Image (cartoon, rainbow, N blue to C red):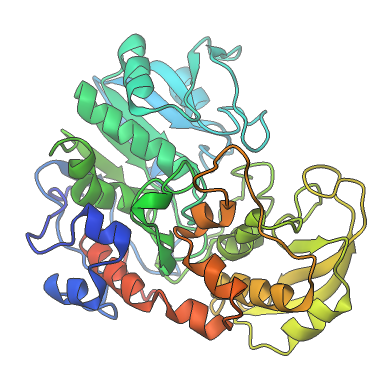
Length: 457
């Protein structure tokens, strides 16, 4: 089903207002929307098209955009010269890679594949990529796109002869998960080269609700390049529509995509987490083994910014968190808190790589008890406040390579505010309450670009 391009309201907060949170509740009101309003299903302007239907009956199976496109014999790509951004999650429900399927079908003119962090076939660890090479199965050139700036991405588009960039990666809904920023860099490169964008959409595995603090301009980086909140609550197709209308013009001198097409997921609702989709889970990265990992990651991922292990080097990363100096007191204190949707277990583990390799770490395991109730960022904040108050050995991670912005937690959370509040002894209610207005403004700003119905919990 086609819809026109994403509307841009003259009263919408601009990029700088969103980055600073300056729009606040006043910005939400100026949009003519409220943070509690139902998702908008407005049409999306002359430059955007959507394939598929908004089938939001939870009794119906969830069908990713890639399967919708494949069932239509890839007609959305007919006559196009295609460059594909994908990784091992870019599969059909028959578990085959979309690149392999397109190649074997012989009906799609694939000019190249652009590999993100961890690579196209998924052979690289965190912070690594696969080098530019020829894929041995298909003979297609795979370009290393991880960390590419706009100029480099535009060069790859031109070199490959691509006129349409396809994005198909399973996101996990957190601002500091890098795949969405590979997509956004590609969008800027599409504006520069005149290429179109096609998003083969997939569910947001943690649902359609937004949580957390807004990114501020001073702390943008590869783990948070633009003005969205920490858990954006959008599918990548919805996010692409939002970025195209609200942020891309500020980065490109007023330019927007010549065409953006979202091949929609059939059967998904905003209140459905990944466990309710019936879809197979393919690890989006080596340290994202299960859908439950994704549910907690937007909160426990903040422990990357501390001297605690976030569970890398174990079989339950981001669910196991700890350090050699931690004992039972952390779990005891957390069990006394009302942590939404989760239970806390005292745990001990020995990481095989990353922080504290080969050392026994005391800590906790976060267990999912109610997927519909979890607020992952609230959970992460409660954990940070408790560990900081209990253990004098706790420290924020400092990066010597960035003397101007040395604290990684500031890049993860979007500003110095969370770190400074917790350092000064603020409780979790104070920390979470600090971003209430900017979250409400973002929630209002994103609503014209949402595609899927159902409550956002």
